[in-house]
Length: 279
Image (cartoon, rainbow, N blue to C red; front, side, top):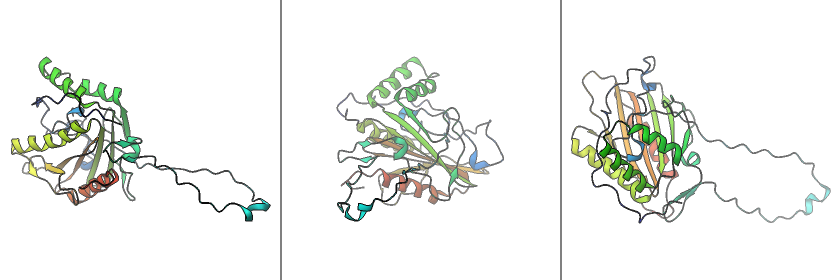
């Protein structure tokens, strides 16, 4: 579990060098607007408005149980009636806010009726990245930044103690694709990433207010500027649950079906809930 909450803090003001999150991707296919792939283009470790414009795909996690067929024995009637011990959960949250189990299991499984969405270029679908793989993508994303900015971002990354990152997207309908991302890291930086995203959105004063997530008043959702005549819309939400930074991105035909997107986020946050914690 990630317990390094007393490690060095974050840089005071990490540089905002991300490209315009509303810029269209010239390589995106036109046959299905909601499945267009804006490209990776996000600085993963920032957990802020820099983590925009990525669409990956994902699928639900299924479990298959195979049992060997056995013939009943004559003494079956005298078998012990003692109940079998309850199996330990494969994933979940501890009271201290840290999560255990695979990030793949912690991600919301594919709801009934949903289909898989498009790949996130360079990452794939239903993907879990370990710390080294995440670091490689992070280094690629910040390669064009100045030496000074890279040093500050590198300091932020090291302070985060990132253990892994996972993405999964859901083709909710022909006009809506939703991505969920979980990043496991230091609890301090997970919380800071979500709050910093809100601060940046508030500072720009260009983002439209997003919908609320029922039961989770601390979650912040926002919509990038929408130009007159735009056929696509985009929703971003940021949250943290203990040692997990949680991000939702939704892309779809305007007007965006934000209620369906927010409901998926609600289900995801409930899956990650810390025992005894108040939302």
